[in-house]
Length: 185
Image (cartoon, rainbow, N blue to C red):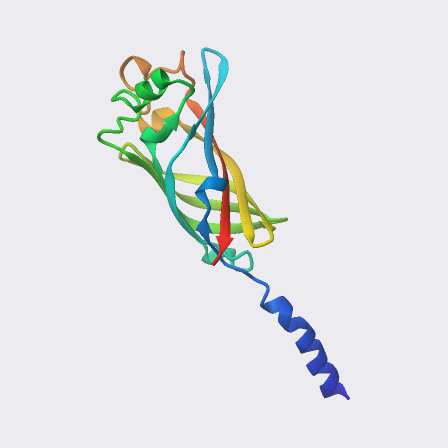
């Protein structure tokens, strides 16, 4: 009788063990990388329209996860064509010499309640800095949705050189916000 009970319990738990899913296919049409900053004390927003990614995430094994993002800096939408051209230029992103921003995770740490801390390296304009990205994750059917935000300092990456290198007109802090939707493998 005990053996039959054990087999029944194991059979009942088996579907739970197979429910874990690995998310690997980023749906860029359902995803967004936005940013906000202050210019002359006024809140400004923008976004990047093009990026590629490699993702591997299993919520049951977050420490084994990996995320790599390459953002096409010339795909910036800063609100106007004039602003887009200005920030793609040499004093800002210098997209002719540095066409991409690159992020690569090094470690993913579970914090509980579907919250994670993703540590990695962010490279912009040839400068690489360690960053920590707080993220949340939720499953909706066969999709996984990651959301979060973190702040970078544009001076750390020489974003805004020459007369733009001071922070009296455009603030140093840039908040990066993202929503990444991924499909199961």
